[in-house]
Image 1 (cartoon, rainbow, N blue to C red):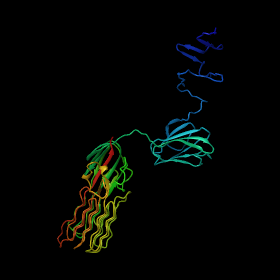
Image 2: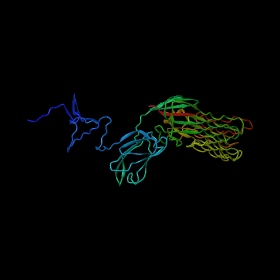
Image 3: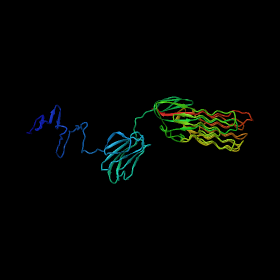
Image 4: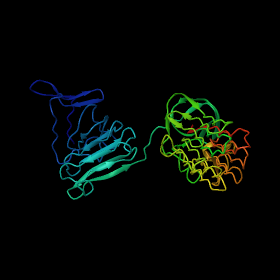
Length: 465
């Protein structure tokens, strides 16, 4: 028969305190926080099959080793620091780039780091090995320069040193969407486009990333053997679920705008007015959205978004992309020849204005284009057709005049006006394209009007769901 000892409590002889205490369904082993419990044996089993062994809240463990993970430190690092094995860090480089110094390598040491503010691409985090330790077999720094990147490094041995065992650029983040009103709103799939053909306000109620298309007014011309006027400045971004080439202009900026909750006044530049006298011309007016300003196109011999052509010279065409931005918002006008010879064409967003010749005025520079999908299904309502399919062209230069006979320069694709033939009046730039006006010839001393530039346009695109 097996012997049994039945007892509820076992107490110490010295002070009668409990060593083992049974209270209800709980059995407590030990006689206080300061008294360790030592269990001796070749194998110790805690718990039972299907049961749970829990570490009390606030308690720590030693001697069990790591499980290939780190303990993440939730206070982000904002300046150079030294990592500790077994810890993970959130590095916030939004203020500036800095370093993470690795601890001295020992087999099994592990360190992780993650991009806290999605800024590693603009402000890098540099990982610096300790002394002669290596990172992937090289005693060199490692630079993290990918937005949202996170890595885990494990020290293996003196040959390879720290080896990256996990590298994530999935950059999983909660997504917010833009909500706004203003202008003519076009919905296509998950995107909304707001088109402003005149002044207004873009009112943002939920902020986020968006793309812009801002074209200024084209320059105007006078009646006296005038050169072609320059197109309005052409500025475009393509950052929100990018529209692929070749249907998006090479002038597109890969960085858009991060809009905040507020109202953004929209300025749509008017075209330069036609002038009923010789010698002077009117530039177009600027178009403005947020931090983006596109400059009005120049009249003959005037600088601007695109420059006007030269006249009665020889005179070089005026400079475009004035003031300068990158990518450039326009091009120079063409060369104008001597009195009664061909004047220069106005510059366009996509090309310079052509030079005048003895028998003809220079053609206006070709504009640049915008993908139909950037605007939506009603894209044919805006801009003009061009040689690249599924696109609409804007900001073409005006053609230069040729007096008293000969050929007037053609207007540039994108709303540029054609020059008057012989003594005829030039064609105005197309409304809401930013096209430059065509030059006019003289008419036996009578002063007909010149031609006016086309007004500009502002288009804003974002993801709303």
